[in-house]
Amino acid sequence: MLHERLKLAKQYLQLGKYQIQEVCYMSGFRNITYFIRAFKQEFGLTPKVYQTLSGEFPTK
Image: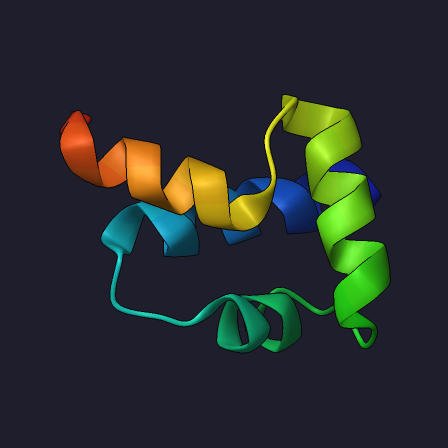
């Protein structure tokens, strides 16, 4: 379940039009600190860094 919510968050971040807090709540998380910690543990980057990098390298 956690993995699925993080995958969803990753998709929202790739769009680049949402703030981190919006992505947090849209993905089903209630605590921004927990969301950032879980995202970093899963993907090795904070949500903000991931969003910035995904904007520089368009994905298919």
